[in-house]
Image (cartoon, rainbow, N blue to C red; front, side, top):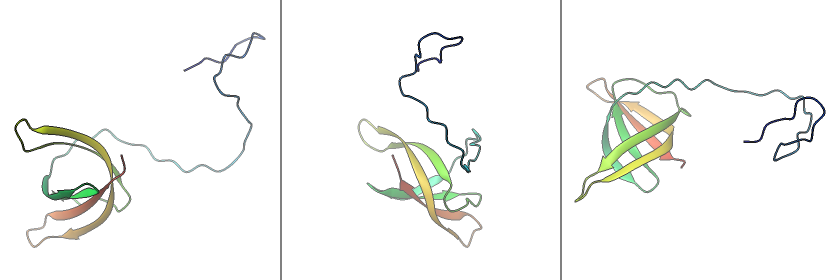
Length: 99
């Protein structure tokens, strides 16, 4: 990433900046790692069983190995699109892959 010049030198940024004053919504992503068990998976997402509720729209980093010889390691971003409470008090959670 390029640095901004300090003190009258040549601009070193890769892209020019444009002044814009607008409202921006943001959230802080906390690096907390939890575990659950997958029920099923497709190219578009997976059903994940967790011990706690997750808010619809939450973005998750998922990291797991698909069975095989050798196993296939998968890391992806997913978005919570639905959740239901199971009879045992755990949560079935629909995750849509977004990357």
